[in-house]
Structure formats: C-alpha cells, structure tokens
Length: 297
Ligand SMILES: NC(=O)c1ccc[n+]([C@@H]2O[C@H](COP(=O)([O-])OP(=O)(O)OC[C@H]3O[C@@H](n4cnc5c(N)ncnc54)[C@H](OP(=O)(O)O)[C@@H]3O)[C@@H](O)[C@H]2O)c1
Image (spheres, protein in one colour):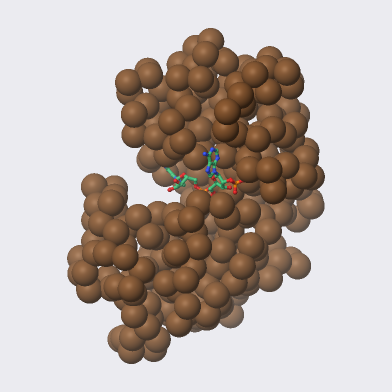
C-alpha cells in the first residue's frame, strides 16, 4: 500500500510517499481503508521532532492521527462495528491507504469522508477545553485564535450550550466567526480594548499560543479561568495547559449528535492528495487555517 513516511525529523521535504506493508487491526482496534486523513498542527510538530514527550516516535515513521474511512478489519474484542461501516476516528499513520484506529464512531448521515476526517482531534480538544475552563450557559467565553480547527468547534459547541463567545481572528475571518455565532474582533495592537468594548469576559481559552496569557488573566481577573492548549509559558501565569486527551469515542459521539442536528460543521479549507502531504504541512504550519485541511486518499 501507499503511505506517507519520514526517516528523519526535519522540514516538509523529509516526507515521502512510499510502498509499505499493510497494518492489521490488533485486539481492540479496527483497520480502515482510509478515504481522507485530517491534517492537524501536531502532525508537523511530530515530523519536526517537537513533541516527542507526548508523542514518542520510532523512525522511520508514518504521519497522521485522524482519519475517515471504511472498516475492513475488526480486531479481537471489538463490538458494535462491522466491516463496511463508515467511521471517523483517531489512530496512527493515517496518511496512508490503510490505517489502524484506536478510537472511532460511525460517521453521521450526510457527512463526506473529506469533511469527517477533519473532526476527531479537533472535537476531542474543543470538548476537553470547554470542560476544563468550566464556562457555564449564560456566561461569556473569550477565545483567542477562534477561526482554526479547534476554534471553529469551540465556537459552535459553546453556542449550542448557550454560552456567549467573543472570538479573535485575522481580518479575513471576522465574518466567519460571526457566522458561527460569535462576537468577533481582530487580534493585534489594541485587541484588549476591542474585547472590553464587546463585553465582560468570564473565562478565556488561548488556542493560538500567541503570547497573550497575561492579557487573558487580566480580562478574566483570575488565572484559574484561563486555559491554553498552545502556550508552554502557562505555569508562569498560573494558567492551566491542557494537553491530556479525554475520551475520543465520547467526543466523537457528542460531535456526531451535534452534526446530525445541524449544530456543528467544520469546513474543509483545502484538500490535498497523498503525494502533496508536504504542501499540506507547509500550509498548516503557516498558521491561518480556517476549519481543517485534509489529505484525500
Ligand atoms: N494541547 C493540546 O491538546 C492541543 C490539541 C490540539 C491543538 N493544539 C495546538 O493548538 C493550536 C491550535 O490548533 P488548531 O488545530 O486549531 O490550529 P489551526 O487550525 O492551524 O488554527 C490556527 C489559528 O490560529 C489563528 N492565529 C494565527 N495567528 C494568531 C495570533 N497572533 N493571534 C490569535 N490567533 C492567531 C489563526 O487565525 P487567522 O487565520 O484568523 O489569523 C488560525 O485560525 C496549535 O498550535 C496546535 O498545535 C494543542
């Protein structure tokens, strides 16, 4: 089978489309014929050797955690899923024709494989940070970096729960944030004042790691009301860094219900072929993805 792989940590040029042995579903796992793989920032962080503590890698390594596809092997002890089912979920080496998933759910009716591949890591992260920041219906949540994959999910889940959201994004994404039900403003010079004009902030999420934790603490008045997924200086500000994944199957089930009710949609910014995985990484790393990028297999 064809698989994207790298033999040394480095830039996008270390990625190669190779012939590889097919993986097989071990106990508690399923194998899918991958139709699309989600492109997450963690994919290029792993390729660069940045996050080896959380994601240990043996070289040569495949790439990709998220996928949507058709089940074609069901491992020992797995129940509730059958060969031929359309699923989306998380596993390893998903930029490939076949991949093994460790967590999955059935794809909701009407979702394409291309769209479905963009959800797994994003919705797990969004649901986790909303839980950890402890924001309640009727309160106002500030989201720094609201137009990316995680931000798009946070905004829509928060709206569904009756939470008001103020989101920051680049000027090209202001209407996008408003379309997801948020009050919107641009990041950059003067942003704290612009947020204050939009309203009081009860809790805040930093999804961009753009060095604004001090300001988020100032706006909420309490470091315990701020959570970041991208700023490693969090402890300096008394802020929680969220990095330990919650239950992916539970997150996918909740996301599937929201998708089916028309309450959650993560747009695909661009789809790439397997052979163009390096371009997908370059574009993701540029840091201005609206929704999710995906690799089509
Ligand atoms: N700790 C965890 O568990 C965890 C989980 C998932 C992701 N992450 C990390 O969290 C970050 C976000 O993930 P993602 O998948 O949502 O990324 P993404 O889809 O690539 O989105 C990045 C977003 O950041 C915004 N942005 C860029 N520069 C900004 C700035 N100076 N101020 C505010 N926003 C800015 C962009 O908005 P504009 O395009 O509008 O400029 C873009 O929408 C990544 O660093 C990722 O590695 C961590």
